[in-house]
Image 1 (cartoon, rainbow, N blue to C red):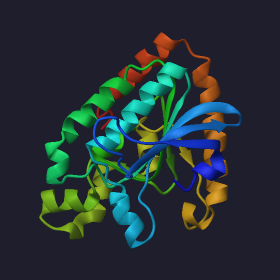
Image 2: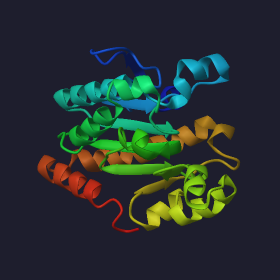
Image 3: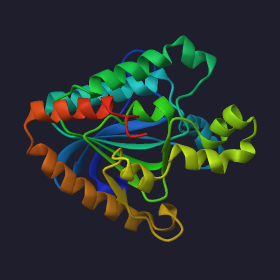
Length: 245
């Protein structure tokens, strides 16, 4: 979560799902955005081999999504917005993940996020793949960084299934429409946030400033909405996924 220190102040990280463990692939906690209290949740991949292993390369297990769920419900209790940052190759598909109910964890998150009565804003900062992304991505507003991707499966995985070779990854990406611009055209993404030439990692401060401006504007508009209208609109948005395609 490189963006936390640039966008927020007074970040206080919260740990654990109160059921099993503290999954380091998802981090979250209370923070302030221009003085306004918010709940921040996001995937964490890490840097360097040891850190990436500790964060499981950004692939959450069930306890990670249950931790996110706990924080989302806490945000509703405090009546503060939830801001999620998505960057994951997907939920961890290992045996231990299956044994502890990864499918249930993802589905329950989607159900809860579709009906909580507080604003939800999701921002894709890298890759957003499959249920591992949408499990913290149900939202009233969906942003994507300019060079990020959002898809049900990686282009390589899609190419391997359809054409029996990952060499067709580029064709698969074109067919699925994984880019922010394409998804904005389809009405799935609300805003494409500009990145510096060469990508966000070239200037994290500039990218963070762009994200911060978008979040402040969106929060103000969502806070002003009637809560029933907010929830109804979010639910219809979730149910409409796939119609444009």
